[in-house]
Length: 84
Image 1 (cartoon, rainbow, N blue to C red):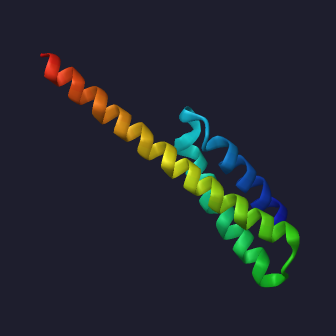
Image 2 (cartoon, rainbow, N blue to C red; image 1 turned 90 degrees about the horizontal axis):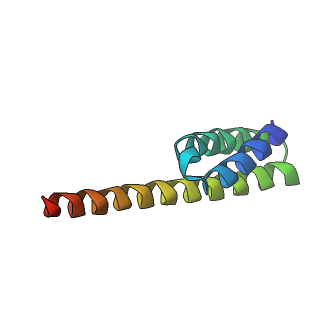
C-alpha cells in the first residue's frame, strides 16, 4: 500500500503542473493520501511518509493550478464581455 501511495503521490505532484491533468491529479493525490495513511497505520516506513508528503504536495499544486485556471477563465470572460 505504501508503494501505491508513493506512486500516486508522484503522479499527483507531476500532474498538478500540467494544465490538462489538473482535473485528474487532485483525485490521484487524494487516493495517494488515503493509501499512505493506511500504510502508516500498519507500520511507519519511509516509503509511506514520502507517499503522504508527495500526495499532499500534489494535492496543493493541483488545486492551486485549478484555481489559477478558473481565475484566468474569469478574466478572459470579463474582457470578452466588455468588448461587446
